[in-house]
Length: 79
Image (cartoon, rainbow, N blue to C red; front, side):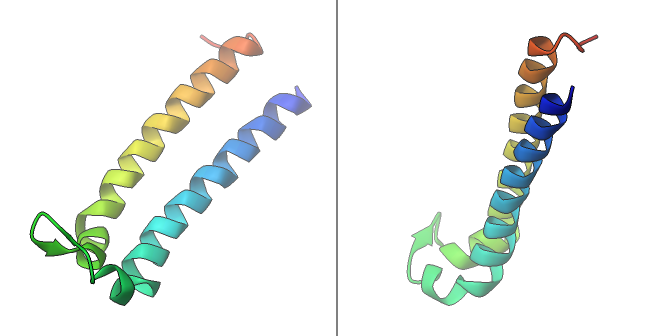
């Protein structure tokens, strides 16, 4: 069971790192560099700050669900 929790924590750390990179990195720290590019008529840094981080957050939730579902079945702890 320790390997189950170790894998679970690894998934969470990786997904939280992605979330922090997209939310803080792309939306705040690198916004000036990203604004040189445009997506849908809006500067890319602005897009990440307003919508991109939300889309990525929803994808992270989906990825966590799929990863945990597979992990639960592997360790036979699924419902």
